[in-house]
Image (cartoon, rainbow, N blue to C red; front, side):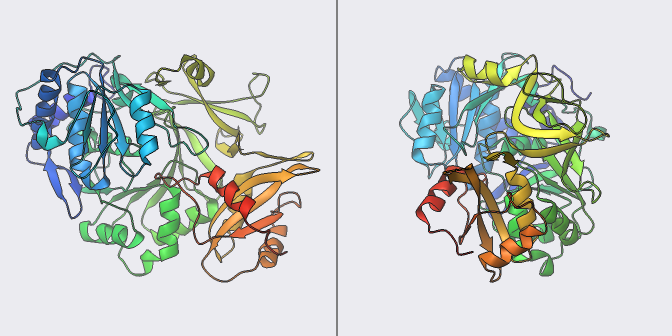
Length: 495
């Protein structure tokens, strides 16, 4: 049955282990793999150890691991939930202060971590997987579908990361126990390189439990290594974030590797610039390119868009039972083509900010999640994003979409990456500024001339900064406060 409200992820693991004990579930390139049977057995050992060490039902357990440790992370994640505790997954690539903030914010009881990781001394005790022991006696101490299962800390591109709590029912929404209905059945492996502790990474763990193919990942993303894995494993499904898609195109891996096995390429975490989506379609000629729009707060609600040249800027329509609406500033529903705030709703039940009722009440309302994005719907119900509400540049009497300016920059053949922000102006309040990474020589004057055919005068960046790379967080999103610092310190580019 699909979407059975009694199914939780640890119970799904138990079922997969009974059906396919020796079948690979998760493969980490150059590290190893784990079968469903071993995953289940080891998860029992983790759950037993937590209970014996006195971690109560609902106790938060930090999981701090590196990307080489996906197998251990998967075991700990399911073991913590099987013990009725709450998993708090975090990548060791985060700054120590960010890890400390997350572990302290949700008051973890214990921290489980990779052998080469030194987490902050937060909680009552710490241990590596090998220190927990191997007592694999079956454990069933889940608090039920409505119990809290996980807390994920948002990427924190504009401020301190916030913990988003998800119940067992929310995490397991849409999973199937019917082998005939398992997703991604067109391939033996699906490939991703998402970081531990991200919402996208958590989704890949759910896929590893629920989908037909084995999950395949690698310790660290590089375009060449990613493409080699596609070729070596004949990967049928690939998941990326836009930053990875851009790197793959810039490295021109499709000219050196056979990527013809890929039938589905999904992009998530941010919208694909139209020029990048078109480039991916050329690089993966046999693949259906799909853009997924969601957030850590809204998941599993999402919109999906099969890349369509007639709607190159759309992020699609609601999927998986999700609902979508556009709300104007006065709270009234927006008409077709009218801009407003994007709201999403999932039948799985909403998530919530852990321990922050005020912020939860502002973001989660009557089952809906305020996405913080401005957008509009066309006559067929397709969603178009204008910008993050916080990123819209108010320049004099105009409002400028940073997404639109970035999309225009990506159309220039010399532009490898671009990011746009608003910078202070004594008369207009703010004006547009852009930072670009180039793949071939181009001047600021050439870029502005190119943009004048694509943008209105007030949208063309008044400042252009050429950088060797854009400042990004561990998820691959541009950190705009750091970009503003770079612009503030740099001299304006010559016109």
